[in-house]
Each structure stands twice: as C-alpha cells, then as structure tokens.
Image 1 (cartoon, rainbow, N blue to C red):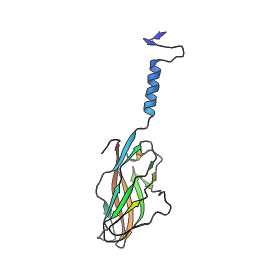
Image 2 (cartoon, rainbow, N blue to C red; image 1 turned 45 degrees about the vertical axis):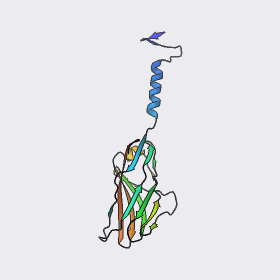
Image 3 (cartoon, rainbow, N blue to C red; image 1 turned 135 degrees about the vertical axis):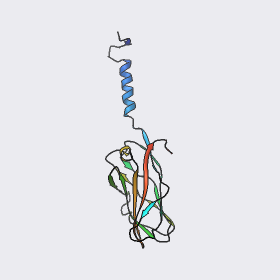
Image 4 (tube, rainbow, N blue to C red; image 1 turned 90 degrees about the horizontal axis):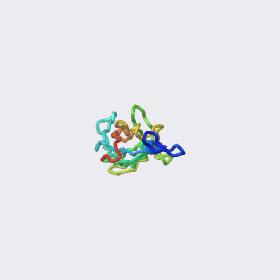
Length: 166
C-alpha cells in the first residue's frame, strides 16, 4: 500500500517514522563543550595592605558533555611571592550563583604554599544544572588565601565554548 507516495508495510512502519526516530536519537545525544581559563593573569585583591602576594593559577582546559553536572579541572597555584601563602578555599561564581568547592580529599584546605613553590588545588564542583548552563557566560574562580600581609582573593575567569574551542 502507498500513502502519499511512501510505501507502508503492514506494521505501520514508514520511512517517515524511521527518519523521525533517527532525528529523536540525534537530538537526545549530549554534545560536548570546552571549559577553559580565558585570562592569563590573576587579579588579586588584598584589602589589608598594598604589598599583595602574587599567585599564578593555571586551570587545565576540560572537554565535557553539556549535561554533566560536575566540574573538576586539574588546577595548579604558584606562589611567586617571597612569603608563604595559605590557600583557605576555592569557590566558583557563575550566573549569579556561588558554588562551594567540594574537595575530594577531606581536610585538603587550608593548603600551605611556600614562597616560589607550586601546589595542586583540589577543585571539585557539583551543579544541579549541566555545565552548559553554568558556563553559558564567563564565570569567576575565586581562590581565597592569607599570608603575613593579610587576606586576599585571586580571581580568574573561565568560559565555556564549543568542543573544539582553543
């Protein structure tokens, strides 16, 4: 039997049905995205004094599925100052919401970083929405620290983009 020029079988299967099923499967796939650090410097602020310890933070680019609800990039903090710094915490501010870091290792923070030394950060965030919603606009990773000069916050900018973004 033919209907509108399309052959139909006894089970009601048609080319249109197969095409519709293929389209549904394609749409249901969770494409990927890239989340990367977009500034090469760290903005630090320290309200106590003018001599701010310098911290360099490197957040490795991640490639994630847009529906993933976690973000755990490899991250390294480098203390380029002449003073010991103590990193007391990490948080992410995105889309007007502050997400608290949930380190995978208990009691990871406070983390001491000697002068002119580097330390890996335990960065692990969980979201109720997928990473595509969290990183829809540039976000700010904040690293709270203290030193003998007083407290400070290092701020870096992260952004999401297409999977092949550089």
